[in-house]
Length: 546
Image (cartoon, rainbow, N blue to C red; front, side, top):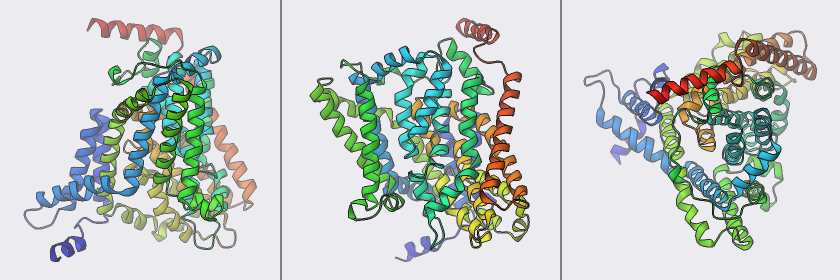
């Protein structure tokens, strides 16, 4: 009892300081440098444990305490957390679902159908974007469903897996954060002050969520204008010459051979039923069948449990449907359990290490450090610049911790305390939206974000390849969003009407984004141009000679 009390009362010497942000920064830098995610994340976790055990007395670091903190309070505790376990179960169930769809021939049939109707790379990218926008209920469902459905289409049109991963990631959190009926809306509503209608507050913030809105606009421009820049251009060049992966192509031995005589309905119907079951599972955990309204049950739902229920319901439906239709035998369905689990081993391992890294930053008081930084009086005196400043702070916190929901929980209450909603203060709505947009932006960029990890899994793309190719695109949208928040803050000094201010700011931001896209189109030739195809062919010949 005495030892447990001592451990419970222990406060690190470097608690609530900049050192709390060092472990994730180390992991992120190592991942970008080495292109290897497992060791990078683990090193970040170890660094967190060492900082936790640091003291001013010799020996300065206690290795026993550090290892105990890494494994007991980090890895083991993360894997025993009920919410995390629910997400892992959901991942495994989705892996099984995808394996069954592949084996029944549903994915192949959809690919053949798409080959007749999708006749260009542009159409394939726009179709992927549209599907991602339609699956707005939850980002986890979005990442894995869009990936499994659209992989045959994008592969046929020679679109790199890195580009597919970007399209999936950019229509996951950015779409969910502007969808009033989604798990994200429920999460944000829960952070609203007592006595405030959280859902109405969320809806009012949508027009100011520049990062989400501009990211969707950017995806459309990238597809329509055929723009690629940064590391993504190399991946697209290689894809045009037959190499869809460039880095880390998965082993083909993990895939089952197609057994059934698949039809398009064998993919579409299970996906629709999966989404339906997941919605039912979420509102069930929120008390919908006990008399609560649909909105309230969504707000009170346990996403991890609800999604696990929904995925299990999807599996049961698929087994019955495929067996009755004669697409698969029951034995074939059961053989997909092992295949689906194997397919999810990599994202499960990365998620576990990412959660452990977050546990290290939490134990070092990273959230409290950022909260204290934001609450300084000097910031609140810069009212016109506060939306842009809050956007940057939310980006940094979400990027370092890999969690947008955690960022909401920290910054939204602080923001609404500094800028109360009373009296219809328009700056309160703008700053709250800046919190959400910045959190999504940092989450979008961070290699330790669960959404980023699942987007890689959904596209079956090397994780570091996804992060490195996505970063220039996300930073472009972030830069335009930052300018838009500066404009919104300045306009708020002259225009206090909510609708007019939000409309003018958004139009200016969209004009900036389209203008930048036109500039990029002039500066960077498209991968489909003759010159780049020749360049790609030369690189391929050089690689073959080596």
